[in-house]
Amino acid sequence: MLTLAEARTAILAAVRPVGTEETALAESLGRVAAGDLVAGRGLPLFDRSAMDGYALRSADTAGAAREKPATLRVVGMLPAGGRWENSLERGQALRILTGAPLPPGADGVEIQEAVDRDGEQVRLHRFVPAGANVVPAASEVAAGSVLLPGGAVLIPPALSLLAAERQSKIRVYRRPRVAVFSTGDELAPPGVEPGPGRIPDQNGITLVSLVWEAGAEVAFLGIAPDDPSAVAHFLRQAAGYDLVVSSGGVSVGDRDHLPAVLEQLGAAVVFRGVRMRPGRACLGAVLNGAPVLALSGNPGASYLGFQLLGRPLLRKLGGHRHLFRPVCRVRLAQGYPKPSPHQRFLRAKLVETVDGYLAHLEKGQGSADMVSFLGANALAVLPAGSGPLEAGAQVEAIRLDMAENN
Image (cartoon, rainbow, N blue to C red):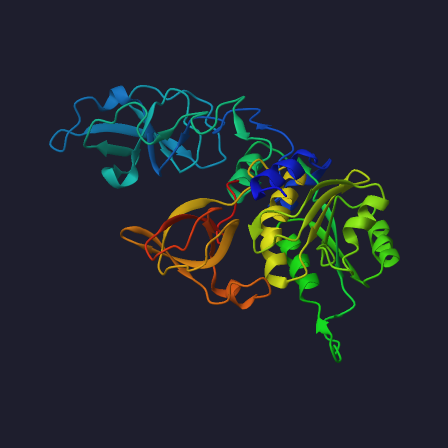
């Protein structure tokens, strides 16, 4: 049985990102860049005014002061989007608006609030250095520089820069397609009265929503009965998907058929069982070139297993550079009495204090508990081999409320 780190390394090594596609810039928010996005030209495209004011030659303001202003003749007005053909000559100024290109001959701008205008003349009361209130060409982005590296998520600022670069279409990784199904004779679909001895299928909707949250496309195939031929049928239905995620039927009980069926279908088992609590009962395999992640039938363990194994796997398939959520050091607000022979993940709510983060453990840490995830924003990680921990003990925590670095 592998540790979580070993299991993740093994299953991630067995997959590669899905193919790419071209999408319109306006529809690419949240997609993953399939390669480095390089600036074809510098931004801004030209020296432009940063303020409403007067474009001028800095030398014409030498020695200007309140008691001895420099007087310049205003020769016109230049708005954003306009163009001034003639070179500004000695003693001339040009009324200029924010965003307009600096006219030839000018090397600075004085803001309109700092001058006195009298007809066609303007008086300046201070020296205006070259470059004042001017945004130089290519000062924001140099031509040939990488705007966004491959594997990064396209966020609004990136789209803004790409629009400035005249991009209308972007090559991105296509969204991974995921097939999800549940297993178990005891399960009833949501909205259907379970009947004696049966329970609603929580895991189906949970896993579907987690897949959507991770940015992939998902299809729920339904509930497979505890029968080898039925499980095989569902796995065959999942052919052509980039990832298959199931819940239940993966332990060592008489009706846990999934591991044997996978082997019969020719799957290469990457790991079976992980040394962690909860969620030990899980399996990773590759069937017909696509990864299969079989998770526990217990809702809490299934949820946690997807967060720790399924989400990083989906991010690798989707071309992301960063696969794991941020980790921080925390102090336990209360003790935890159980020893942890295997790595243990406790649902916790982190509160920031002057001394760092304090982790308040949620009630209900069992494999079946889901209510405790409602208030949890982190998973406190207890190292394998640790004994009972007292309040104040320092451990690492995985931030469930923070996305992976883009």
